[in-house]
Image (cartoon, rainbow, N blue to C red):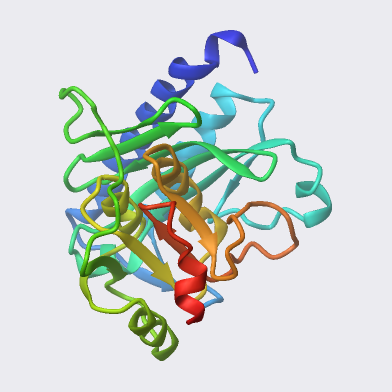
Length: 269
């Protein structure tokens, strides 16, 4: 990577790309649009594709030596991916169901993966302009408006009762059972990767996902949460990692603000 694109300069460039992608999404959001169904029954809109094009083209121009894996271009064979030491992992529109519902709870997610870890993450909320970003070892930040000073994020110690960020569009009997094992809690519903962000800014204690997600759904916000002092682990207690297998599906996981608690043990009880 060119030295001029390391560190803060690279982060600033990715923030700019995320904001431009968010603007393109809003252009579709404000008018009528069609919704298609992908092979896995998830929705696809013109906004997903517009954001995808802006992000992929911009990242390739910014860092031509780093491959890009986006939700809308996932036909890259494992034989190719397994040799990547560094790559961009992108969800051009995380929360398309929320986009279709027009509730504003969808995001643009861009992450840089090195080895099997997310080391740079940007999460942008097109409707509000709220943006979260982090770089491994350099903290996590929230910028509520483009012209405002970013505020450093810090997770909190677990409270009692727990405040749990949950999905607006997904849920299952298994998830409800696992949440019951954690004891008394209050559930806050949010769409997309905003659940991670609630934990990262100390307004929720955890987000538990007992259902399918893809690696591009979590990578950017994972970096933000870790840099804010939190952690993301599988329900077996192992760190959540990326690009380690053919499938791009994540295992079930728990994203927490208080990393000193053995959450896997609590879930197993």
